Image (cartoon, rainbow, N blue to C red; front, side):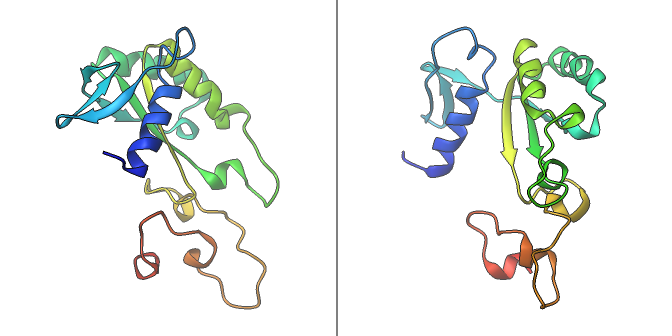
Length: 158
């Protein structure tokens, strides 16, 4: 099975796995109707946690609670408009430090499925797209400055 999304998912899961920092990379595949890590069946039991919505000092406690509930994976969006508040100005500090959020999840024994934008479906302002539309004389709509997601049609964005 050679699916682009599966490859991207495997890379994300492998690079962001709890053990990735301490050991050699894992193998990940979909086989026999299930996911496998290192040839062993793996069931993703996940919960959504948006790091910009949680004060940084509470991240670890929330991750511990997620683990205590039986989760093995946290999924999170990367909110483009939070990290690039104005064109060319990037902010990955404080509550926007996605790398530290992932490290803390790893330290708590959780996998992370990272879902980069630009569009996010999480009741977030402008769907996570840039707050600043491109310079144009034409009236701007979100769909004119937020690129479509892979596999979506133009009519689905408008």
